[in-house]
Length: 197
Image (cartoon, rainbow, N blue to C red; front, top):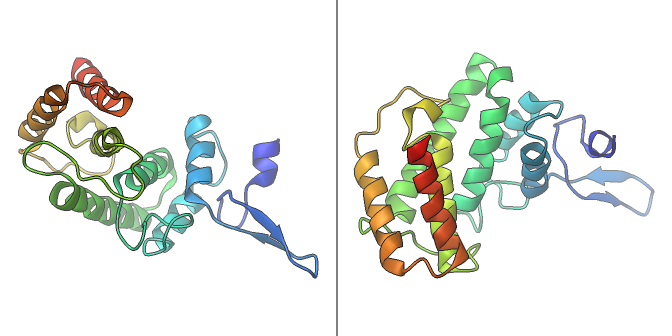
């Protein structure tokens, strides 16, 4: 009941509520809060279609409302967004699905050309607390898009022929680190679990 009451029925999002001096309530959009409400309830929330549409509207907005951080994509926020899109997908109309395809394509291109390096590593950014965070969210994002596993590609039937080589390079680079940090271990274990499914 609390989750449902807190949700903004206009756009489906969650976030901080502010009250101004005149007593008017301003309901803020917060991607992180919205992600956790959806993820932690396994998508069992109302208005998933509105949530996805609002996220598309906020494409160029900076976090906490949008998926950008200091004007740039980020694997952590991109992972959040794609997971939300996955839950919302069955409720989306044809036009919105095409917008989602375009958005995920842009995120994936950014990840593979700006975040991922040919040696199998991921570049750290301002949202990463440790080197392991860069790997963890990079791997989780690629997995959520179905880049490594075709059966997970809810948004496209596109083939990614380079995916096996990319996965092998990431695994090799992670092994070379010694896996002495939790983020590194989680990234490696996530890749191994994905291969076993």
